[in-house]
Length: 103
Image 1 (cartoon, rainbow, N blue to C red):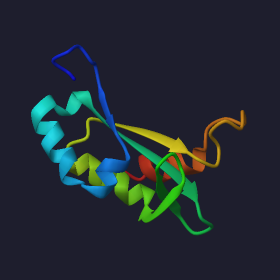
Image 2 (image 1 turned 90 degrees about the vertical axis):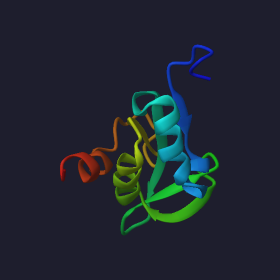
Image 3 (image 1 turned 180 degrees about the horizontal axis):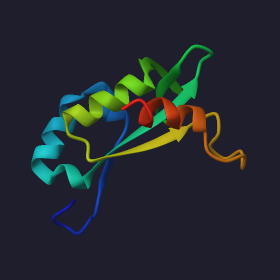
Image 4 (image 1 turned 45 degrees about the vertical axis):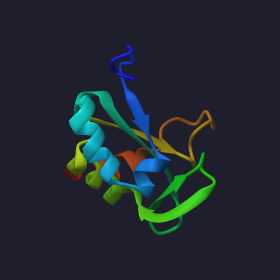
């Protein structure tokens, strides 16, 4: 896809099912071209990863998953809060702080 002119490749569900694809894709197309999408929803205790358009709970901590995909070679993360997306109430700052302010 990159050779055909795409700027970025986004992976979500398949990366959860097969995390090795992140490392392989990063090597093949470069980490700067690889975006891992993470859909997260607060379950009362922590932000949990969902897949298949927010339909399936994966019982994975979203903050830990974000760290893992970085370590595997993701150049970017597209973080979507299922709780806040489409509500017109702004960003889910609690989720953003969990990932980016503890680094």
